[in-house]
Structure formats: structure tokens, C-alpha cells
Image 1 (cartoon, rainbow, N blue to C red):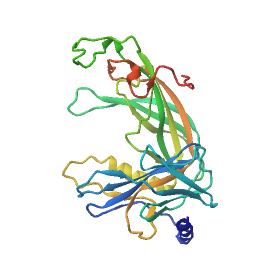
Image 2 (cartoon, rainbow, N blue to C red; image 1 turned 120 degrees about the horizontal axis):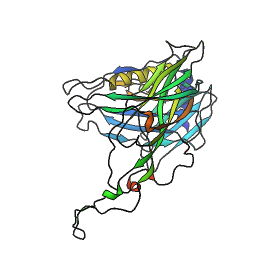
Image 3 (spheres, helix red, strand yellow; image 1 turned 120 degrees about the vertical axis):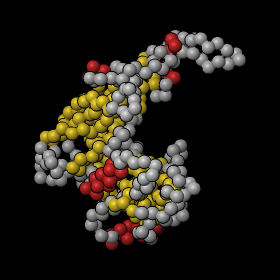
Image 4 (tube, helix red, strand yellow; image 1 turned 60 degrees about the horizontal axis):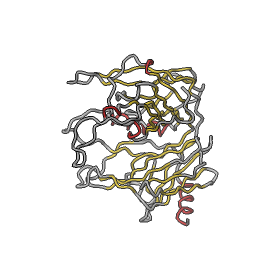
Length: 355
């Protein structure tokens, strides 16, 4: 603990001015520490992930290694400290206690000591209030694919919010857990031929056709916004996209949408990441630049640390999507097996299933 006492006093002397994320050049083959995680006002176990990845030019390029054995704490501006516990089953993942929730108006700092004794800290991030999502609506999106006969398609979710007056607000949307009715074809089940059962004919199973499948679908883009163009107004804005894979929208699909308030600096960081991920290049283009976030090495501030410790208030809105809400759907995908064999699927509906 002595190192963190020293760290706290150093933090008091750091300038509290805003720090802008920016693109940096790093040497070939460097092992960069990456921090991925956030804390919100929603109670529950919240996670910080620590990894190291080799940069362009390394023989280990693209290899991501979890950082284990670190000491990870979150400290607020009142001096309260929460220790995060390393997961035994998810290497490099550090979790808060079950009932942890960030408090509105408080500022939080992430502090990390790696096994070699190196100490990293974030700049303070304040929890700003977030408005509720008034309503979620559905818009079908079709995406032509060059060289393909069939379009890709999916559902874009549009949120209606009342933006607070006379203050700058920055928003970040994430997908929460989803559940949908999964339909399969156990009557078409054909086991893999073996010495004991060499037949290649279908051997139908008596059960089961319909299940409820749970999944976590990440957005294929980063959904963020600032209120420069709608300050103090009621606005409708795209907040999520869910691709139609031929299974999700056969009957009923449910998803929770999470809306966060974030700092201006976190917004700038996510905007840079969004710009990079949406650039389409070729194999002849230079590798994308690394984006520095809000973490620093106290002993060596020039070290490049990737990722961002995000803090914010969060509100959640749930929506049920019926197949008839879509104006275009993909052809139904066929799974020739008992639906219970699909990962995340079960026959019984969730206890809170209420379309």
C-alpha cells in the first residue's frame, strides 16, 4: 500500500487541466499496455481489463497477452478506495465488488501497479448526470455488398432524448444483453458418420424446435454524440445497429440499450477510435496509429499507454422487436439440431420476458 500512498500525493501535484487524446508513433516491436474498462452508476460487478500487445514490426505482432498479478484500485475524490479482484477464470480481468456503483458528481481515478512495480494512473473522470431515454424505435437498414447478390441488413435503433439546457453533454451508447426466440430444425439432424453409426441419413431428434437464446452483441461501430446541434432540445439519434443473421428476427428479439454521459476528453478519444476503425484501407496502407488515452506511467510519462478509463452515469432502456417491425429480413437460417445444443439457448423463457 505504500506505493499507492505515494501515488496519491503525486496526483495532488498533477495539473488538473484537460488532457486531449492524440495519435502517437511508437517504435516497432514495443509491448504496449492497454487498459479497457469503465465504471458507471449501474450497480454490479464492473470490469477493467489489462493486456499487452506487440506493435507493428514485432515477430509477435497481433499477439495480445493478459496482464496478471497486478494491483488495481479505483479511488474517488473523497479518498474512498475500492480494490478490484483479479478473475480466476478470465485472465487479465479485474472486477469490482458485486454492489459497486459510481456516484453522481464524484470524480474517479484508476490506479494500477503491474507485477514489476510500475505504477500507472488515470486522470480524474467526473460522473455527470445523464437523461433518460424517452423511447426507442426501429429502422430497418439494408447494406449493398459489392459482388454479392444479397444485401446485408439489420436493425438500427433510434433513441429519443431530452438534452439538458445550457450545458455541454457528451453521450456514448452500448448494447446490453439481448435475448431472442431461436427456431431450429431438429427433424433435419444428421449425426457425423462413425464406425458405430455409418449412416448419412437424417436421424430426427424429438426435441426441441424453439428456445430462448441469450447473447451479447457488440456494436460494429462506435455510437457517440455531443449536443452541439441539439443543446436543450428533444432529439432522435441512432444509438445501435444489430445485424440480421437469419436467426435473430425470426420471431421476437429483446435488447437493452445503455446510454452513458461521458467527459469531453473521453468523447474525443472515442471519436478518434471511431474515425480509425471506419477508415477502409488496403494491405499497402501503413498500420493505423496508436491512440493515447488518459493513462500515464508516473515514472515515465513518455511511455505510450493505450486505452481509456471511462466513467459516467448510465441509464438503460429495453425494447422488444417483433419480426413484423422489420421491412426487410434475411432468409431464415437453418440449424439442423435441437435448439438446446446452440450455445446460450434454453427452453424456458427468462423470468422477466414480457414482450
